[in-house]
Image 1 (cartoon, rainbow, N blue to C red):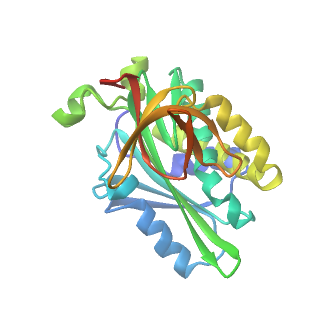
Image 2: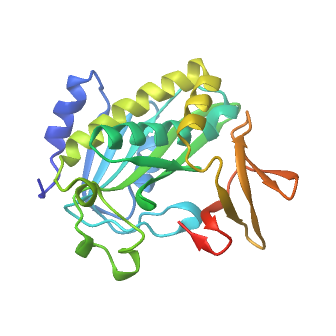
Length: 267
């Protein structure tokens, strides 16, 4: 199934699921996230799915570069206008993570969520997510959520430094899958989880708690000037991660997290 991404096929999949988002296909771009935000600035109310065949400047947390291989990876952003309270914006990445988790599992992988929005399979990263909201006054103007997924990559497609840290659907299942179908499935699932977020944010958070593999693990929290080792014990109702360190409880809204097998071993 390797080959150029078909925007027409994506449209057919979305239409079959009653999703009327506009599709914007880009042969090559720096970042679908930046394209989504530019589109939102000029078209104030339209939902859209922006897909790039070749994305060469994608980013994750702390502006880290996200590797994407043209023809086999999936790089896209979903632009939505959900009517949710500003306090629920941090939960949008949880909705996105649950969407990807559901799709990856239905495609034969034993994917897990690593807080806040990474998807792992057997300890190796298969998908990263970034969600950004634009606020006007007291309302959310739009939500741009970017997905970077390794789909039909072979091990040789990754740079040497990523070959032990990254994986793909193809590596894990031994078969190629349709990138168009995956993008459509994730978009539809994400739309549904955003509806749940609007109607019952506590329910969404509880579902995320059940599927977040970080909870219960010994972790290293990496901050700008400090590293904290403790046990991830829960998510607070505001979505922050609750860590216990030597009997002290600490909360983090955003941080780099490493899962520890023991004091010196990571996964």
